[in-house]
Length: 484
Ligand code: BG6
Image (cartoon, protein in one colour):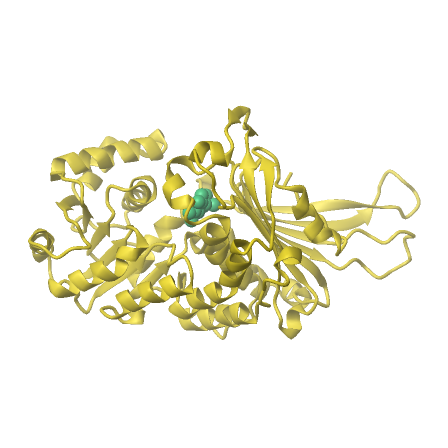
């Protein structure tokens, strides 16, 4: 469905995220006829460029990051015609802001205005202040904040306070692109629309939960950012905790934004703190060394970086949600750069049937929610082994592939989220108290690591992580699920 005409101002418009994700996502929505022809997309960045030079960069980005079969020349021109650019150091006051003001003055002041902050997060407060100073915040303005919101609680508070001084919370959209992924959204449908699942969704029937996001890529051109972040800040504090919340939360009263966010917040608040005393048994951190990924030799993290570093490229954590529903159920979370395979999934292992009828204990039912690739849901069942007359069991998988009509690829998670901000639907965005609750849990882990309570392990690029991560599960008789 087409949205109302809007002005989208992207700060950080020459950066990697804008080129790789935001412009391609907006192009795709235009291609699907969801963006009206009088919408404006204005890039703002420090680089001195005129409109023409920016449009040329945008054209290159579309060609580079989108498959050629969806790039029809007519549509590309229609998209590029929507673009404009202002050279602007957004963290400073100055006459350059008048140029942005002049561009925005060309359209109706009551149009939806989205300010997308894709810059260094420490600039968010300053940009908001300048937007206010130059009179650019209208009642129909909203701001989208890219992650990371801070590197700890103090910096997150500073960013949220800085933006919050000029934008009320309901105009602030904190983006977490994992919430834009189809299977992640499907967690709620699967749980609450299927009594079969809902009835079994607790410690009584569930033995453990695993949440994995592994990537084959390394730090690419982002080493300067990544080395100040690491796997816990980059993936777990935000994406994987959000996924954990959807798996663990109580049923919200509705799918209204605040109902869903309250239910997620309750999970974050119920996460058992990990302290200096428990970090060594509950967490594993590691860096990749040289290895082979997808048949290619790749250097180790420290070699890529060219200097010593205590930043982890792998993290695995055993988390506990201290609510009656999840008593005694470990939530294993892990994420890796330079893993052997790109896979994001949620694996629910159920308790095995308490029967002696078949001799050996039947295998546990296991539900795998494949976030990517190959989106779908897989359920392992016990069936009689047809090769044998006696009641010998073996397992069979029910596999529901989730596909778009006509076998089209899934839209990138940014596509939906970018337009949700225009529509004013915040349900898939994060509220301030969620960010803070996530930091409250993550920060003591980072502190324990900083105090060297947990040794830094290594794993070869192309492997599935360090041996120590296996031991995290072994005490409970579990093993990591390796996607087929
Ligand atoms: C980003 C992280 O938020 O998510 C990146 O900063 C990571 O380091 C990316 O590569 C992973 O996203 P996806 O959608 O490829 O799983």
